[in-house]
Amino acid sequence: MKIKNPFFYKKLNITLNKICKVLKKKPSGKNININDIKNLTDANAYDISFFNSIKYLEILKKSKVKYVISHKKYEKIINAHCYPIIVENVLKSVALISELFYPDSINDAVDFNVSKPVKSNYKKVSFGKNVLIGKKVKIGKNSVIGHNSIIESNVEIGSNSIIGNNVLLKNTIVGKNVRILDGSVVGKKGFGFSPETIANYRYPHIGMVIIKDNSEIGCNNTIDRGSLSNTVIGKNTFIDNQVHIAHNVNIGDNCIITGQVGFAGSSTIGNKVLIGGQAGISGHLKIGNNVQIAGGSGVIKNIPDNTKVMGYPAKDIRNFLRENK
Image (cartoon, rainbow, N blue to C red; front, side, top):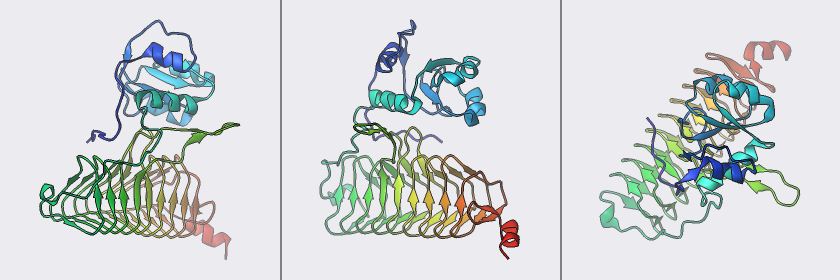
């Protein structure tokens, strides 16, 4: 089920020619309105998307999108499925168009609309001291918000959830029976930029964080919101302290992730995955269901279902133990 993103203002009446102008390309001759910029999976016929790696070819084939930003080396591939817009730097071009649609997203500004909660607006919700709540925040009954926590505008929290002390929630939708423990920061922008000689160009991050029912987020976790898609934590997934989850990471249901694990951006973690402490997961990987990753491992390639891995680079645990007798 897709959830509408209430966190970023989107400009309307963005035409294909306006996009071409921003990218310093010649007008297309088809000055149609483009609805939004999205990833290949979510894009519809009148959205725009991007293609930057051959590993996403099967997704491109299934996509409904008609207009795709890409590099010249992929022009023939894209021509077989939709219309390419050829640029030198794909990711920076995506950033420019994201900022065109969502001009406020680049700042990751402080929400100055927060204030002390009006308790009559939140029946059966308990608030600690010095709590600040933004506009249009929804909090379900029997939930608790701890001391000094800030819930920024449009955030939603389901019933029977506990938000600890000194927690910051922004651009986030939280399900029912969720616990987010002390000191966690959820929904900040991801670590994305284009290296430049004078000043690095920051990428807008226009996704959100979705934490599903019955999950627990440990102390001092940092969970980045998505760039074009969302960062998702599945149902009944428990995450230990000091874990970092980068933008667009999708973690499945019933996972257990122990302390100091780090996830790079855009990796997908299956259901019932167990990850030991201080393991690292590289970006754009697919970790299957029922996978076990030993503590301290470095995962740099996809892992199929029902596999146990260990070491750096992580490999089948039996091979690792055989090689390190």
